[in-house]
Length: 203
Image (cartoon, rainbow, N blue to C red):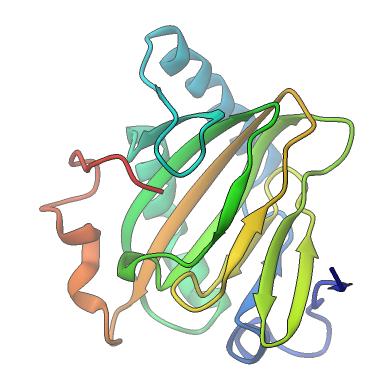
């Protein structure tokens, strides 16, 4: 596997990087304090058995579709992400996974509600940062994110995957959007009446 270094935004803008490469990395997209707050909320949800095991896409993981805490984050980050990539967005849905040792994510592309997606780790118990691989053109990039960093990517277009997790636990949140004036605008709120409304388990 020939793996390249991630594109870094310097003199070039986030918008141009996102359009040209199909992804961009936003450092500290969510502040560490907010990561801690959400992580503590997740512990309460775990104690209440609010998570399912094996969602059909990742066997060794607990997951929840559209819990209130990440739906709120999805909503709050909409204008921030819209401004970063200079594109008005509608939020569609959020998703939460707690990966455990041995978890793998097969190479895939996402459904229409994930036209613009953000994935970010809230916490992890691992000796090393667990990379997410993305493929753009003939190039494979290993993306390593610290807590609160976000990979913003074109979920429908960009194949992405993870190899086996060697750590003990990683809490990952996914925030999904569509372009307000794009081809998938009908998927606003993932065709739900509002954010927070229950959706079927899917990542």
